[in-house]
Length: 449
Image (cartoon, rainbow, N blue to C red; front, side):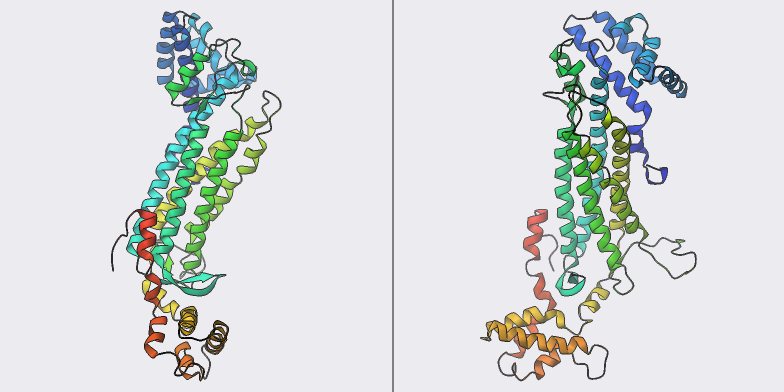
């Protein structure tokens, strides 16, 4: 991912220094386990740990360059690292990587990196959830128009809209927790995964120390269905980001202007039009969501490896693992900031509710007529006639509001009391279930009117 969309903490997880530090930790833990089992001298395991720790603590660009130089000759990244490590440790390095294969190191390391990345993403989601909860509670009773097919439908609560997104991101957090548990696996099983040269207790020891679980059957690699499920979880989160970003983009349109992104002092919206206040953050989030979702198909195709292993997945994962997690980390942080500072305009929302002359209350009027004894088919015909009369004459000579057309309709006169129509056209009636929904979503009803 380009630096523009990269945050330092997530970048550090995928930096070579962190990768090599984890590689060494895997090798050192394996040696410690073998020493406990009597397979290598305990003094050698201590030497490997002490000298290796010192080398990793002093790790510098010169060490990176040395490993790269060795790899240029060996054309094998793990061998290059082990050769560099042997230079630092000395004769006891003969016990490093004993009975192991490269995938034991690579796949277990990737599991550690993905769990580290996931912990950052879970913290990001918590920040998003906090921002959405704040908006939901601040605007629990803020009436706004609900839309279906992009057309005014019936009134709703802006807070309830935010609560809906909160519920989605809460589900996404649970999905990510599940994905983390599934990806947190360790494989120290040797060539083709048979433990022919390793005691399974070595794998169990390394797994416990790294906070992972042993892979039941690793062939020679950890099965990639785990990774596919992980990237699918990231993609679902990205889609949730885009859904919310699309909502903000629509609400910020000049014709709507019910909410908008915070516009910073000194910010410029257009090089040509000084008046512009564009939804640049939500548009950016829409693009980032596409990039995160782009990792899904390659991850799914990685599942079908040949026999006990091949490396067709390797080049894919070297790209999608850092790019998808870095991109999602940035997107979640940006989304949290955008929603925390979102500018909300309740007066404009109220004006938009009535901007079509009251026709958005047609559903309640239909029900009121039905309750008053009018057949539903007849009630629908009457209400639609009055609504269309209002709709088609908006801003034109002879315009009458929906209520005025209802009052003038001969089929309604005397069949329903004015106060019943008043109640049917009161937007506040659409808030009666808000407490129930908030309790279901947040575990509490929140502020009261």
